Image (tube, rainbow, N blue to C red; front, side):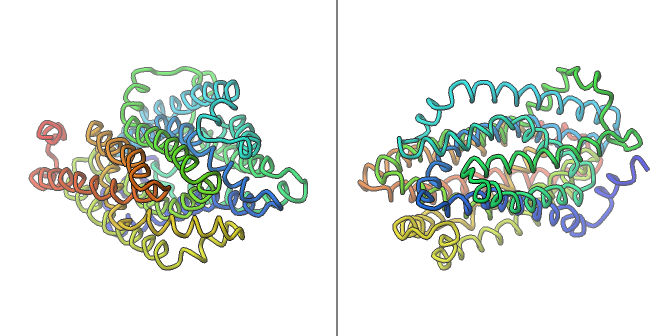
Length: 465
């Protein structure tokens, strides 16, 4: 029983595995995106202050990205290690990795909460808050920061559930948080008169309920992957932690880079377009993020399959799952392009009825997502390098679009165009350049995978790359 669940990752046809693992991941990630969108939708319709509240929420994005970055630093690395260890049938070390992840998430979450609450107002000011938007940003982020440990633990352990061969449960827990959040949001925001604070409180409470079940799930000692007694969880194996954090460094830096970029985007939008331009970006970001999260769902489905088969030295299956996942991701992003260019008006109307804000968001999403179809391929390729433990290439691809290309464009183009349009056009330019570089690295990797025979030592692949 202990090895029956993960073994299928190396034996079932890849198409079946993609459906089995990616579909729950897609549903979970889409639900997670809707989870964030629900807050924005309700907040955007708060009487008299909806537009400013949306802008205040947008101010918190960089800080929330930092939190997400720290979560992925711990969670993604642990999930990847567990997938490979299960492929090697090394359950003892896999359980140590799980125990390590819990304690590291607690430590990282507490440090983030402490410094965030200590310097909350200056941080929000730095991220673009004005006198009009600061009260909304502060009210929302204060409660989110208090629940940060809960958030880190929930999302980290949810990834492990998926990687250990139970994607349906991971999906079910995410759907639970989305549904409960959609129910609690209007109650706390409108019925209890809590406004934007109610949205934040609903978010934390829903994650707390899901985390409680997750901890109960991993407390069953009969499972091949389970948590030890509490006193053992409090011990950190720093050798395992180092390996886990190294693998998670790629997505961590990607999220951190996203935080830095969003910070400058916020500042440039406020400078050239004011608070409403920042609110428009908040709406556009939520809509675009929906499609990004679907691609991330495919990535989550690919991760245990690629990780397991790499650990089992079945390189042909690694190559196959990558190519098929990249194809599906491109299709999803093409759909996002169609919505952005032809259905942007109705999509934006979900978030606000303010005519000025609607016009800014509709125009912005059309400019921002001109070359959106190529984004999915780059995301999947970056994820593959991470799954195979090729940290340097994963980090490089994670950073190239954000820091090497997008950030300079965000600074230069608005000044050249003398309007916030320069910010919007920065996205397609950086996407195009980074996709070219990703394509070169992807072709090289595929050629090397094709030359390897199943059963070859994986260090052969590493030495050639």
